Length: 476
Image 1 (cartoon, rainbow, N blue to C red):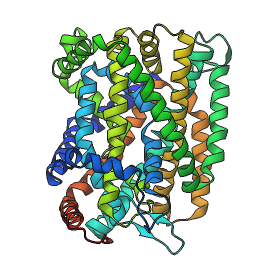
Image 2 (spheres, rainbow, N blue to C red; image 1 turned 90 degrees about the vertical axis):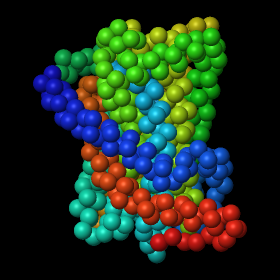
Image 3 (cartoon, rainbow, N blue to C red; image 1 turned 180 degrees about the vertical axis):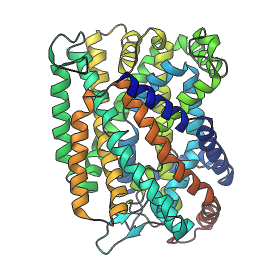
């Protein structure tokens, strides 16, 4: 296993090297310029559109339902475990780069949502299919279909082996174990030299069964579950984190200083443990993309199913996902970790955030704070598993021409991946997820840059029409 992890680390270093980091950030900066800082000037309108569904729009689910489906896939273990992992590996400065990447990523997410609706297909039964594979093929031309196929293939892999299964279910089972059997005394069996608690086994079985019951129902069932669970879990987690921050408000200036200094001079904060600024950037940006998926090309797959006739409007709604996921939720998680000093005490994964909750709310018993985090993590991870099943199925649908037997086989494989997820090593799981994230992002970023002229033109026309009170046009 150690040799396998070394191989994965080498591949991860190549995929998530400086070139890809620069490309993703550069694309976000470039798109921010093309849409004229839209993520700043039109954020209030985007937040309003979240709850204001468009009448008579084509599609399968409401704009809010599409956003909740996207958020169900983005607000997951990346917000709890991913942030902790990034700060431990890259120092507090990783949080700074995570937020910077998210700011420019909002423009990227807007562009993805716009193109998804503009180039989607809707059949006679109202079934919508869209995403990077269609805006690459239809927007860039048939000669680029190979790039669309490449994206769809990596999309299936990300869901099956990366964000969608292993990392999520492992985050859940580790949190359950930390709460019910922190010392790992109740061993069910051993595998590859590791002991697995009954808490891990039972939690893994329960979440596998629950996932199986929902994914069989497809997008409409996933959207219904997401519309109920996502707002509840997000509000609960944000409220707890805000309470920790406010209770330790005197530590905020020091924490912000540590984060900013660590972003540019990590060794000054970590005592030389982390090293260079590049490492802080790499960990922060990689984990940020894992969390908010801006540039990854996943959110537009859900956006394409929204009941709307206006690509720009859906682009604005899609953009709010990155704002909520990273600039709000991840920042709050990171602040609690840095304020409580939980990032440099030798812990890893969910244990870092759990310690932050325990130390941040000292007047509550550890059992209560641990339970709150466990509940949040269970809901976060469960909805992410559902969202990524939908993404991967749409990618597979594109690859196979919509063959139902392929989708049915995939669903069984997906459920099986959820089942075995708890027994993968933490380091290997996150490295695999990072690799597939990077490979999936590359074709999408190329398409966004190539179609930036279309994005800028449609954006300009939309705001001119809305200022003049013109009718909504259907973009094709």
